[in-house]
Each structure stands twice: as C-alpha cells, then as structure tokens.
Length: 231
Image (tube, rainbow, N blue to C red; front, side, top):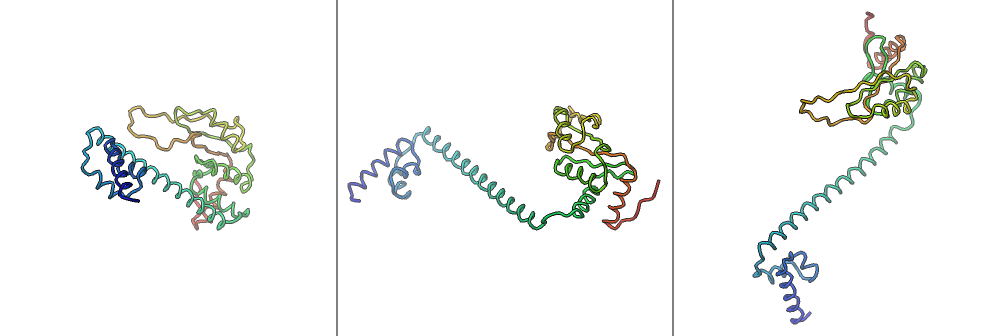
C-alpha cells in the first residue's frame, strides 16, 4: 500500500478516535497494528463523556470475559465429571444380588434406625430411598403392607405433592403414610437454609423387631462389631 493509502487510513483512524472509539474498535475497521493506531491518535484528546463510555465498555468487556471464562470452566468441569462417572460405572460393573445385599447393609449402617426393634431408613435422596425400598423387600423379605411412610418437609412446600411423589417412587400406598411433619421456619433466626429439599426427607418405617435385629446383626458382621446386649 502506498503513501496515499496510509495517509487515508491515518485520517480515517483519527476521525474514528475523535468519535470516541477505542483502539480495538478502530482496528476492526482499519487493519493496522495497535501500535500504529496509538501513534496516529496519541495527540487526540477525548472528552470526559467519551472517556467515561470507553471505561464502561472496558469494564463490561472484562466482566463479559470473566463470565465467558467461568462458563467455559463450568462446561469443562461438567464434561470431566461425566467422563469420570462413566468410567466409575464401568469399574463397578453389574451388581449381583449379594452386591446389592452388602450395599443395603452398608447404607442402613449409615442412615438406618438403630434403636432396638425400630426398623427404618430415612434420606432426602430419591435414588437411595428407591434402592432401600427394594432392598427391604428383596433382602429382608418385607412386604409393602409392612411399610409406613413418614415425611419431614419445610414450611411453605407442598406436602400433598411430596406425599404423591414418595408414594409413586416406593409404591407405598398413601394410606400407609403417617401425618406429615412440617418443619417451621424460625422467624427470628438469621440462619439461611441452603439445602431445602422440594419433597422433604422421607423415611421408610416398618414394625418387625426380628427383621430389624437381623439387619443390626448383618451390620455387626460386616464391620466386625459385637452383638448388642439385649435390654
């Protein structure tokens, strides 16, 4: 490009700068280096309003860049997590009946009712509740007619919907549910509840002392404990 062409570009760049455009915006229209644009326009004084707008645009660009970077990081994390989950599922493989039995014993050891003769399991995770519902039937030979359902739910959530949800998940008829317990919010409390479960916490209960004691025996055998003393 000749001298005339360069001169035209310089004049155009200066005109754009006087309009308040940033060096980056000028480069998009005139394809020269940023150093060249800076040299051509260094003597042009912007108005206070133009400087303010450039600063706002710069800050917006930084925020936008941060948002894009965070979004990309989140997507990468989700993809990585999905890969790990798939690999973990392959490592575990299919579960045999004994595998399910041991898994249920371990879950009951963590979340099951331990008081002598009182059987039950409570959790807010539908996947675990569904697994244990099947486990009680498969490993403990407990019929659905033995089950009772209990719900603890926060004030303001729909207890009727929660009851329908847990009943459909476990196949326990709603008529076998106890009265729903409503956890009332403390008006004067400054504590912010972070984990409010839409369907509350659900408990599968059953009245069969021998079955519950047998489960406790399985737990004892699994972890190498001692048999509890009879009361």
